[in-house]
Amino acid sequence: MRYKIVLEYDGSAFHGWQRQKGCRTVQGETEAALAHITPGAAVTASGRTDEGVHALAQPAHFDSDSGLDPETMMRALNHWLPEDVKVKSCSYAPAGFDARKSAKRKTYEYVMYVSPVESPLRRTRECRIGESADVAAMRAGAAALVGTHDFSAFMSSGSSAKTFVRTVYESDIRTEGDRIIYRVTGNGFLYNMVRIIAGALMRIGRGEKSPASVAAALASGDRREMPDIAPPQALYLVGAEYEEG
Image (tube, rainbow, N blue to C red; front, side, top):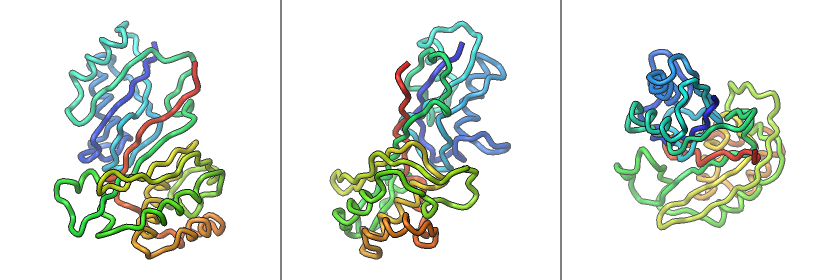
C-alpha cells in the first residue's frame, strides 16, 4: 500500500532533505522512523530542501505492507520521529501518485524583517533586510517574475535541470508588522532560485537595485546580474499542489 504523508520540520539542525552518509537529514530521520514499521522502505518527497530550510508542509510518499490504517501509521511514525520533524497528515495515496513527479505547483515563502540590529531569537527563522525597506519597489520587482520565463539568471551552478524555463503563477510581497514576506508559487524551481530571488528583492528594498533589474536579468539570462543567494534559514516550503484524484 502506498501512503501519502505531509511533514513539517525545522530545518535548523538538518543538512537538508536528501539522505547523506554521516549527516543528519530529514529523509534519513523519516526513513529511520519508518524502519521500525516497514524495514527498508524509502521515502520520496515533493522536492529536496537545502540545509537550514524549513517546511510547513512537505508532501512525501512511501510503500508499506504493514497493513496499518493512515491514522495509526501517522501515530507510529510520530512516536519514532524526533521533535524537529513530524507528520501532520497521512492518507492512502491515489493510484499512480508520486510525491515528486505528480506535483503540479509548489509554494515557498521567504521571511525578512526590518530592524536596526540583528535579532538573536530570529536568526534561525528570518533574515534581517536592514533598518528600512522600500516595500513598493520590492513588490514591483517581484511582480516582474510572474509568467513563463527562462530563469537562468536566478540559478546557481550545479543544477541538473534539462531546461531553465519555469512558470511562476504568484510572486508577491506582504507585510506583517516588521516582517516582509515574499511568497512565490511555480510549476518548479531551479537550484537556489527562490533564495536568489529573495537576495535580489532585498537589494531592491535597500535601494541598491531598481525593480527593473529583475526584468533585465530575465531577458539577459546573466547570473552575474543577480549575484546574491539569501541565507537559507528564512526560507519555508509552504506546500505542493496535486491534481484531484
